[in-house]
Length: 215
Ligand SMILES: Nc1nc2c(ncn2[C@@H]2O[C@H](COP(=O)(O)OP(=O)(O)O)[C@@H](O)[C@H]2O)c(=O)[nH]1
Ligand SMILES: [Mg+2]
Image 1 (cartoon, helix red, strand yellow):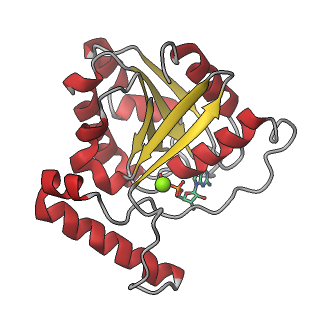
Image 2 (image 1 turned 90 degrees about the vertical axis):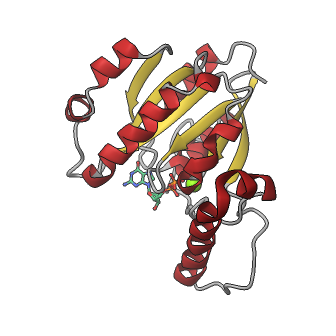
């Protein structure tokens, strides 16, 4: 199992859609226009709610409500896919399951660490205001016991945006060399654009190399 984590809106869902297309061979020539994505929020499972307490439930309900408003949907309708987590199987060439967890599910991310051999952690290179929060999330993940054995790939996404931070800037701002030196995990980095497809082949290679006994 590979976990895909990161703050809301960094581009996790689009990444998975692009990787799926690329790995299936459809996107060999041209990935085409990016497909629409929607926030992976919605209703948490009852177990998740119990674990995270009322604050998370409220936060999640508000997220769902906001999305319904923005998308013009009815607040009463509840789409079964909005469970805050999405599973996608990618074949590279062995099957690897990627589980995306919605950014607002941060409080219950730890309940998904079991069976995680590899971790994709995504940051938004075009959103400087989110950088410190993402860094705190990353530190929390790296110090989690359940992820001590996981291989980690940090993705700096949205490098197609004109005013994006360079990877060097981001690494220096979050003091990544120090983080890597102190972490138990093997950590790699890649600059990507899920929108344009830049760097995605590298992500597939990393998944291929690290999947090991993954299923
Ligand atoms: N310009 C640009 N936009 C992106 C990129 N990746 C994702 N987005 C956009 O960012 C928004 C949030 O993406 P989404 O995949 O839903 O983020 P998630 O909340 O992390 O799953 C969507 O409008 C995407 O089209 C990228 O590499 N470049
Ligand atoms: Mg998503």
